[in-house]
Length: 221
Image (cartoon, rainbow, N blue to C red; front, top):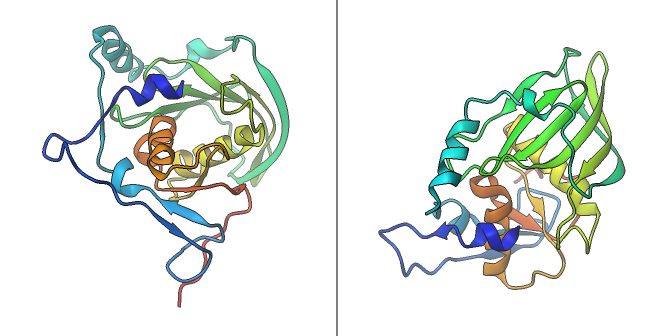
């Protein structure tokens, strides 16, 4: 999956030879989070996604009209399941329909809710990558298991499933700026930034090797 999206990354036409600057921040001054993070915004906030495949562009545009009903009972091929315990504030209402829609090709995800399942799909292809099974209470909803499509990165670290779902909910559903977890086998800063953009598009700002479930914003003095 990473290679597919990596081929689609294009630098802005005004800066084809741009050198991107990436900075690691330790926990403390200048770092708004309680995690060691890599600032990758110089790439993720400035590159463009494009495709020369007309059918992919047409599929992306067609899916802008979907509310995800066609995903009900859809199967993730060769899926695996992981038990989780993620809890988010909620008003108790039924989660149904569109939770988030990509607005441009730099947005990599669509999110829908149907029958107590949240579907996380790729905005370009419509593929279901995660199905999060939820329970709704008066003041929150919880995710107790996630069905997912394995890939080369998840195979090394299944905690990426939980972290990725959490990141997508925090950033797309709740609109927060939040770090995302990266695989440990990515060690070159630019590779990290390219991976991040391929996975999360313009919603990726900061990368970390740490689990992000307990991430909090630090008070800067």
